[in-house]
Amino acid sequence: DWTVPTATQHTAGQDENSSDWIGIGGGCVDAGCTVGDETLIQTGTEQDVSGGQASYSAWWELVPAPSISISMTVSPGDHMHASIAELIPDSDVWTITLQDVTQNESFSQTVPYPSTHLTAEWIEETPLILGTNAGFAALPDLTSPVFDHATVNGRPANLNEIGRASCRERV
Image (cartoon, rainbow, N blue to C red):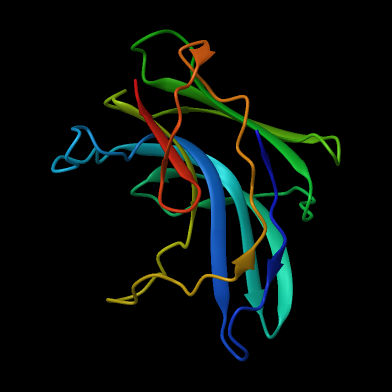
């Protein structure tokens, strides 16, 4: 679960983007983070600022494919609940669920996806800008997303903060 942060302009005249999401895969496989997990199935919200105006949306993604928008009303302060669960252990068939508890809206999609099953993540980040060598987006000012009620394999997760608001656990 997380609270959709309020996004406000950090630098006048600059487009700024952020994302809060959960995922299976994509993290560091070893303690020194010298080996990364190339698989990543994820869902979350985006908080962007363009022309001084904030916009909010929901999405899901199977890396390396582009993200897919979810038709959902997302507003700052909304309580989001997300789940990514394998239907049968080691089947590589996943159900992605995203609920906006505040707006009483939900989305669910079942997809095949080969995963290493090595890491789980809870992240607030600035996404990559699509395009050749575009790099990371500028980050707007954000309130805290307050990730909570995290579980891995049905047990409470032992979240470790990395950076501002991302949390990861090896599974």
